[in-house]
Amino acid sequence: MTASLSSPCPVCGAPSRVLEPTVEDVFFGYPGTWKLDRCTALDCGIVWIVNPLPADQLAAAYAKYYTHDARPPSPLEVGFGRWIGRRCRRHGDRFPALPFLFREAENRLLDSGAIPPDPNGLALDVGCGAGERLDYLKAIGWGESEGIDPDPVAVARGRLRGRRVHTGTAEAIPMAEHTADIIFLHHVVEHLADVRPAMAEVARVLRPGGHVVITTPNPDAAGRARWGRWWRGYEAPRHLRLYTLVALQRVLSEAGFSVRYARTSARALPFMTKAAAGATGTALARAWARWWLDDRGILAANARIRSGEETGEELFVVAQAPCP
Image (cartoon, rainbow, N blue to C red; front, side, top):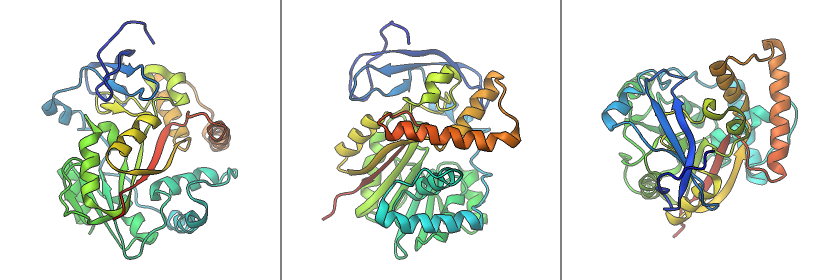
C-alpha cells in the first residue's frame, strides 16, 4: 500500500489510500487499467474502483462473463444439501472441519444460506444467471424458487429450461412487497456502485422476518495479501466495491436488518488460488495431488478463521428483516 492520499471513502467519508495503482482485467481480457483505493477507517475499510467505466462501456465488460453455462446440481449435492439444511436447525452456520467433507459442506451451507428450507416459502435468487441455483433450492426443500438477472440472454436461457427467471436488478426487483421468504445475493454486491439502494429494495421484497444471504469477495483475504493485483477477487472493471465484514454488517444494520451470521469462508481458496496462479504463471501441484492439498489448505485456513482471523476468501453474511 502506498502512502499517497486519495479520494474519500464513498461509504463513510473517511480518508483513503491507494491500494492498487494499476489493475488489469487478466481474467476476461477487457482492455484498460483501473486504480483501487481503500478506506483507512478501521470500522469500514472498503475497497473501490476510483475510475469505473461508464455504464454503457461497463455492459461490454460482461460480454465474456460466465452467466449462462453453470452446470445444474448433481443428486449427491442435492442430498448433501438437504442434510445440511436439517443440520442448520440445530447447529446454525458451522460444520465440523472433517477432511474431504468440510469443503462440500461449506459449499452447500453457503449456497443454502444456513437457513432451513421452508416447503411453503419462496426463495429468490438475485443475480441468478440462467437460474441453476433455483433448481438446487427447490430440490433441497424450498416450496418455490424464482430468479432475477439483468442479462436478457441468461434470463432467456433460464426460461427455456422451465425456470421462473425475470429481468431485473438488485436495485429494482420486479416483485411485489413482502413476497420472498429468503433472498440470495451470491456474488452480487461487489458489482454494485452502491449496495445501499439494493438493501432497501431487498427489505421491500422480503416478508417480515425473512432473510437475506450475501456472499462476496473479502478484501482482507489471505489470498489478496499473497497475490496482490493478481488476486481473483479484484476482477476490475466489474467489481466496483469490495466490502469488509464490519462495513457490510453496518450497511445491513442501517437498512433495518438484524445480522444473524457474519464470518469469512475459505471454501473458495482453491478456485481463487488456481485463477491467480494461472494469471501469474505460477506452477501448481499436479491434478492428482491437488484435491488433497486443497483440502489441507482449506482446513488450515478455516482453523485460522475460527481463531479470530477474518482472512477467508469470501464474506458470508445472513441477516433477518424486522418482524412485525
